[in-house]
Length: 114
Length: 113
Image (tube, rainbow over all chains, first blue to last red):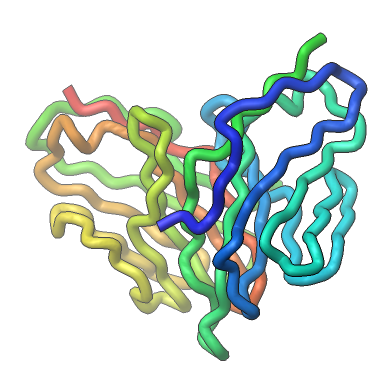
């Protein structure tokens, strides 16, 4: 059911920016791009989401291409605690009744190297 | 302070037993969910409730019965537990507004022996 493609794994040096790519070439106009991560066996943690514009919060930045067919999550200064599985998820809106279900794929396992 | 809390954190039980997992959220959200993460770490939605009303039921065996006494609580009752029910179960909540993210609890690890 997942509508996104992510590399299965990536490494990043501690202190560097971690750039995680995601392809969502079949995204439709009312679908948001969400990023979550799961550290070890904890609950998935919401990071950021966006529709068309680039977004930034205290955790990360989300860059969405103009055609919206791909996006990149940027962790500006990766720390060892950022080692986790990162999920890119596309999720639509059901008119006034809320949102479609959030469907997780297999994600990218990001390892931060000391 | 905990936004979405689940109890118990660990649950070990024998096949055939009936057990419940409780979930509470103090975020004022309208929608609550149950997700299951199996041994291969694949996260799948099981149920979604909106203001105590069932919205999503993802072909889950009817041994699983969610109950929402009010919009801040969504409990999961499982009858006649089977070995294949062993997994980590995550509760989540979100506002109803379009584009709202989900907030997850820290999970309940269920082991059926």
